[in-house]
Length: 602
Ligand code: FAD
Image (cartoon, rainbow, N blue to C red):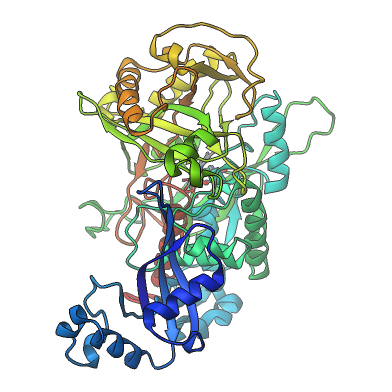
C-alpha cells in the first residue's frame, strides 16, 4: 500500500476529483489505482476564505515499488534520500507519500489457530476445557459489556449478560415518559439499560486513549459491520447519533445470542459471593503488592416479580448464579453497585473527575464561527473544543460537545438531577450544546472515603433537583455571571431540551470554586469564539457525570482484589467515552481468553 498524507481538495468535491488527485500525486493513470481506502478525512478551516478537506489515504496500485521509485527520482528532495527499494517502507516519514503496511486489528486474535480450533470444543465441553468452571457473567451491557460479550461469544464462551435496565426499545419508551414528567425509573433510564450510558448520546466515537493494539479500529469496524455508516472509519471526530446507535446495539445483541450468549434484562447484580478462606495462603504479589483477598464463587442477582394487581408494591426475587468469572462493566452511575463492591472486599479508590454546566448556542452561530459564513452551510454542523486554566490552576474545558443536539435530563436517582448531551445522526437541531466543566480533585471531596466522590456528586445533583423542582434548571449566561435569579417563566422558545426545563438560579447550584472557575473561563473562551459569552446564551445544570468518581483497582490481568472479578470500562475507571469503554471491553475479554488457555501472549 502507498500512504498519501495531506491530500487536499475543495469543499464540495466529487469522488472523481479524489481519484484524479490520487493519480496526479502518484503520477499514474487512473486505471493503475486498484483500490483506495480513506484513513482520515478532516476539515481544514484555518483559512476561512479557503476551507478545504484534508485526507490521509492508502492506495493499492499496480507496481507500487516502481511507482514510488519513479516518484522519488523525479523529485530532488526525495532523490537524495532514496538508496534502494528497501528504503521505500516508511521512507522519510515526513514526506507525504510513502510505503505502508495494512493495519491488522486485534480481533484477529480470534482467528489464531490455537483458539479457533478449540471453539467448538469449548461450546461442547466448556466446563472442563480450561481454567473456568462456569461460563462468564457480564454485568452491564454498555459499550464495555457489549464488546466484552461479543469477543467472548466469538471465542465460544457463551457469556450470560445481566443488565439492570430494559432492552433498548422498551427503555426508550421509559425514557420518553420520564422526559414528559414521570418519576425517574432507577433501573431503566438515560444511563441504565441496554446500550448503556451512550445510547441517548451524540455517539461521538473519538478517543484520546493510545491504541497500540488496533482495538479502536476494531471497535469502529465492528460498529460498521453491525450497521454504522462506513465513514466513521475515517472521518475526524466520527459520530453515530442516538437514533442509529439503537439499531446497532440490537444487531450486536442478536449476534451474541446467535453465538450462544444469553441475556437477562431488568436483572440487577446485587452481591458477589466468595469461597471462604481458600486464599489464606496465597502470597502471590500480583496486585499492588497485595494478594487477592477472596475468590469469586457466585453472584446474587435480583429481578422484579410481576405484580398480580395494579398498584401493588413491587417485589424482587433473588437468585444465586454460580460463576468463577464476573465482568463488572457497570458504568460510572451504578452507585449502589460500587457500594456493594466496596463492602465486599473489592479495592476501590478515589479518582478526579470534572463538574460544571452545559451551554447552548445557536448551531448556525457556531458553524459560522468555525468555518466562516462562506462555507458554514456547505459543511456538517461544526463543533468546538475550548480549554482554559484559571488563576487558581483549575482546568476548565468544553466536553462532550453535541452539534445540533439537545440537553437531556440524565438523572438516575430520585430527588437528584444530572444533565448530559445528545444528538440525532443528522445533528440537525437548532442548538449546539457542550458541557463546560471544571476539574475536581479528591481534595475537594473533603473526605478520604473511597466513595466520597459519589457523595460530592449527589449533593450537587440534589441542589439541582431542588433548584428546578425536578426540571432541568436553566439560566441565561448574563444572569448566571451576575448571580441574578431573574425568572422568565416559560422556556418553550428554546428547542434544545429533552426533559422538562425551567428558569432557575443555576449559579447557586455550584460550589464557589466551580462557579468562579467558569466565570473566569468565559472571557477566555470569548476571545476564541467571539459571541461565545453573550448574555443570552443558555446555561443549564448540573453536569456531574463526566467520568467515574472511583477506580476499581485491577492488576495486569485485569483482575480486581477478588479473584474472578474483572472491573471493566468507564465505571471501573479505565475508560472515558464510548470507544475507550468498548476498547476496554475487548481488553478484558482478551484477558479472560488468555487466562482460560494459560496463554501469555497471543
Ligand atoms: P455504561 O455505558 O454506563 O454501561 C453500564 C451498564 O451497566 C448500564 O447499561 C447499566 O444499566 C448497567 N448496570 C449498572 N449497574 C448494574 C448492576 N448492578 N447490574 C446489572 N447491570 C448494571 N461518550 C462518548 O464517547 N461520546 C458521546 O457522545 C457521549 N455522549 C453521552 C451522552 C449521555 C447522555 C451520556 C449519559 C453519556 C455519554 N457519553 C458519551 C459517555 C458514554 O456513554 C460512556 O463513556 C460509556 O457509555 C461508558 O461505557 P461503559 O460500558 O463503561 O458503561
